[in-house]
Length: 87
Image (cartoon, rainbow, N blue to C red; front, top):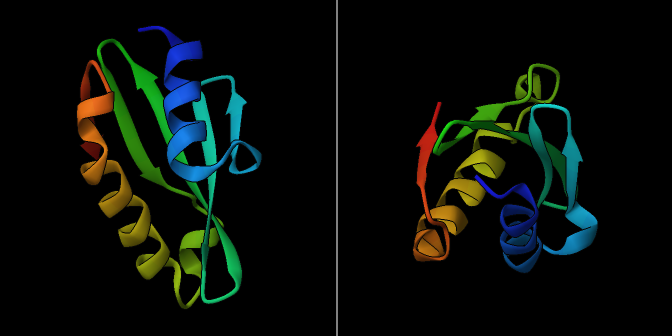
């Protein structure tokens, strides 16, 4: 898996100021109802695992922000060369 290519695709989908690499993959900030929410993406073999943030998931609108990110990833799934798994 080419993480630089993956980051370029995520930057295109979410905006480069909302995608941050970290040791296991990426943190993506999704804005929903004027609030930022964090979504994790972990690179694992030929898959990107989309995960809920343990802190933000307790917030009221987190599920809506998570669904927004999910829909965006599904819409652009043809830009990825590997499977995206929603956890």
